[in-house]
Image (cartoon, rainbow, N blue to C red; front, side, top):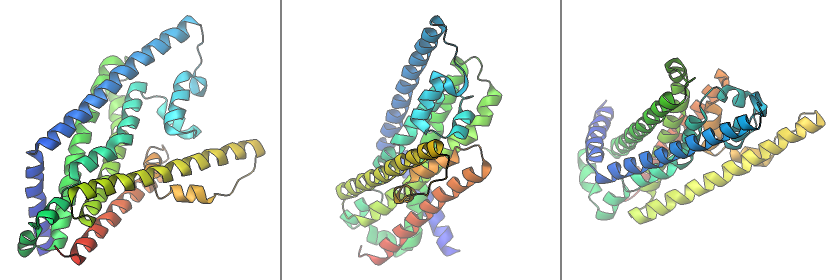
Length: 301
C-alpha cells in the first residue's frame, strides 16, 4: 500500500510539472499543427479526386474505389479491415494513420529526460531517500502516459470535429461509433511508447544518450514491423494464387515484436483480434515498465 501511495504522489507531482513545462505546450502545438496540415491537405485532395472521377464518369464503389486503394496503402491489404474502414471519412483515417506513425517520436521528445536528467545531476538520490525507486519509476511513467493521452485526445477531438463539419454523410452517431476504435488505438500505442521512453531514460545517464537510444530502438521496431508486414502481404498473395495455406515465415514472427503490428490488430472489426492487439500493447507497456523499475533499482544513482 505504501508503494501505491508513493506512486500516486509521484504521479501527481510529475503531472503538474509536465503540464507547466513549455516543452509539453510546444509538442502539443507541433502535433496539432501537423494534424491540421494533414487534414487540410487530405480534404483538398479527396475533394479534387472526387470531382475528377465524377467528371470521368467512373463511379467505382466498394473495394474497387480510389478510396479503397488509398486505405490499402495505409492499412494493408486485409479485406475485412478495409471493408470496416470504408464507412469512415478519408480525412479522418489519414490523420489517424499519420498521427500514429509519428506518435512514438512525440512521446520520445516529451519524456526522454524524465529520469536521465536527474541521473545526470544526481538529484535522483534525494528523491530515493523519501520514496522507493519502484514508486518513483512507475509514477514518472504514469505521468508521461497521462500527458500522452491528453495530447492524443486533443488531436482526435479536432480531427473528429473537422470531419463532422466537412463530411455531409458523417453523423454524430458515426463519430460516436468510430471514436473508441481510433482513439483507443492511439491511446494504447501512446501508453506503450511512454513505458518504452521511461525504460530508455532509466538506461541512460544523460538526456542526449537517452534520446539517441530511444530513437534507435524506435528505428529497430519500425524495421521489424516493416519486415513483418511485407512478409505477410507476400504470404497472402501466394495463398490467393496457389489457393493453399502458406506457413508463417520468420520475417512475420520478427514483425510480431513491433508495437505497430499489434496496433493494426486493434482496428479489426473482429472483437477477438481487437482484444488480442490491445492486450499485446498493454503487455508491452507492462514489460517496459517492469524493465525500467528493475534497471533503476539495480543501478547506482
